[in-house]
Amino acid sequence: MGKEIEASFYNVDRDRAVELLIKLGAKAIGSYDMRRMNFQVTSTGNAGSHDYYTCWVRVRTDGKHSTLTLKEQRGNDITGREEYEVEVGNFEDTIRIMSRAMPDASHDYFESHREAYALDGVEIVIDKFPDLPYLLEIEGSSKEAVDRVIANLKIDGEPDPKKSVPTAEYYSIHGADYSKIQRGYASKIAELIGR
Image (cartoon, rainbow, N blue to C red):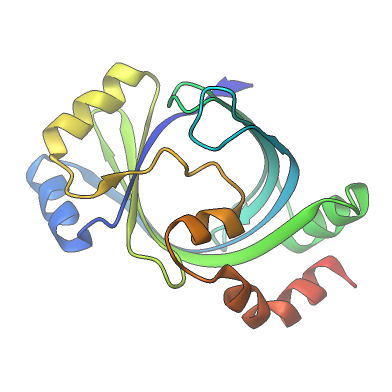
């Protein structure tokens, strides 16, 4: 178990962010085509409020490494998330196991492109999800470390405290139609969950 201390910024200028990261001495970790399936366990309260709680399971792969992660978000503070993660040997089989273990859980699948950097002990990722602008996330071992990188980067995007909501809701918040994306992935989802 561990705290996931992460701040997210939406609608980021990717080229400007990379330029600033390089100028600050960030080291490029890699570029990845990500695939993930989320299984929603529960969600209560209003997203972004202090009474908000959500819990979900994510199966994710970058093509080389796959993980199974349970995430819990309490409230809207960046220190309110806990994460339990293990590496798994097979992305597809893990999804099939989870879909059978939680047959009533809503689920969503999506693909994205990720660029990862390291700076002052903090990981910075720039994600591009279908039909959304670039998203930048800063994750570190403490709120102070994350805040320090935020201050140095002078990020031009909008703070995104509602990143922990279910995917369809997240897309809706940002004015995009997630159901269209899900329909495009329908055959992949059916193949992955074996139904």
